[in-house]
Image (cartoon, rainbow, N blue to C red; front, top):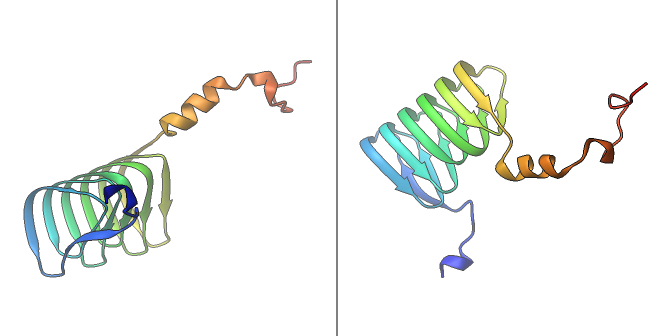
Length: 136
């Protein structure tokens, strides 16, 4: 049955008013609407709701912040900081979206995914003519 499961499936929720401290490993999508202190690893998306507050380290495929996150985020695909959200710390990702009104206080390192890097290494500069590549 594992092969037929869809990605993006919301499988775990830490509800509003909940408090959790420790380490959490989750397959699929995780939503935090309460307070979490510790480490989170998910194979898919981590959503921090408007009332959500995380103090710790997070890893996953995608991160959507509506509330507050203080710590580090290592996200493979994309981080979205929604309006009125707060991020304090360090993030590593390939894509970053910061909505107007969001607070970003920290450091961001953006690198292409391994696949994109390998594709760029295989392209010869003369294969893709550009006015910037012309030699006079």
